[in-house]
Image (cartoon, rainbow, N blue to C red):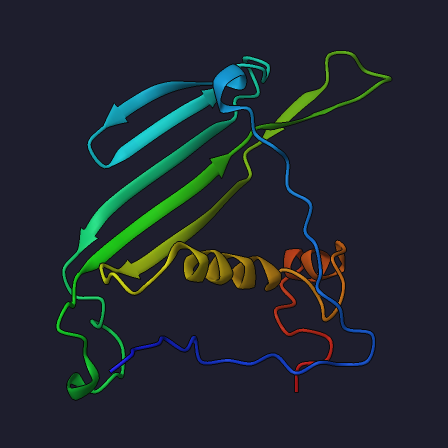
Length: 167
């Protein structure tokens, strides 16, 4: 028997739909980052190009997850023989500075953070390509239908969680 894994959803094309591209920066790990924590299950690095009072840190953390099914409504008869997996956190923390060109003494700092957590079963048939598709779909949640603009992020920032055309 040949086993396949279906991710469960098929996107319906709409007028003008195309494959969207989200531009991402090419992070230069070798030159721009230095490790500050290197413990089992966790790595934290700081961006040495950031101003000292505006640090940027990245954190990778991974822990074992004994039962990937815990908290789901999946019937135990549909469980894989392997229930364990990993929970991996990829986190970016930055410090943004607001200054005033008229008042040189004015400076206010803020600390935005963004993270993606991957809970993935330790099952050999789950490929890196499948996990990449999951990450891509998760990032797509930030946007409105068919566009990669700040419109969706703008709405989320204001507490508007419903997409424009979500019925």
